[in-house]
Image: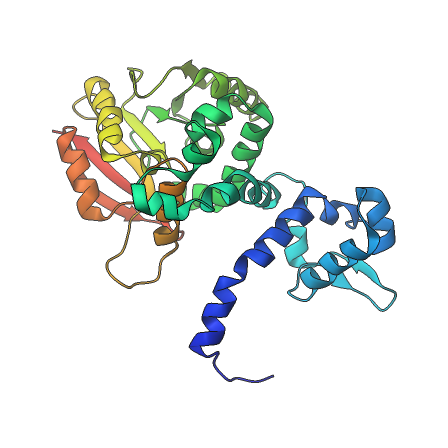
Length: 336
């Protein structure tokens, strides 16, 4: 194997064509190919019958994916699982939902990146005619995929967050925009004396209730339906938001944080869990996720200085930033 470093031309060509592999993974996830070979390797002909696809075309897809370590072809022409292919199994926490979501609504929206850069407006709205969260509320199947994708995409952050940040002294935690309940469930399990409130839109609450019940936390975590653009529930001594603030503009964030400021006690804590943009040329996934925020909901990732500004405008002091082993940090604030 050559140790020769790729030339700039080779590097940029690989980047230019990277959507080939992303789209191929999306199709593999859509066809549940990993699930079809999890018990035993199968030929492309057998898989074609199972997936209602054209055998030779499916073989070509599998051959390309196998060349990069996703599936593996044996001497008999059968395709089996590899560690990367296992990530596409239809199980909780896998990357299958991420692949589905990224290849559908996200892919179409990213096709409008030029429009986004020219106008500063979301590509999703341009394609689908309305904001992403409004659209998801009308499409329950895609909303379920979105929930699963968020778990698959951000799942490792949960454990890292609760290990890096000390929740001691918090008796009632309000998870604002708590989604399917995954995050607050993990916090409550780690802190058995704590109680919680999950606050989100009515259609989201319906999905969260079942998850909290399945986790055995229904008696410790109340669910309240509402919009954080209109209010925040009283009663918490800490208010937490993970990957919520980055969905919205500075003006919208001011509205959200102001509602929390109205109900949070003087001794309370504001816990925003987000990526914090690093300066200049330093490589960081957050800088790409920031573009995704531009394309999809119209929000942004922020620097520490930008967080200090939006905190101060809403009546909070940014007291510290607690890093985690993942990309996210806990951005702690207190009312002033």
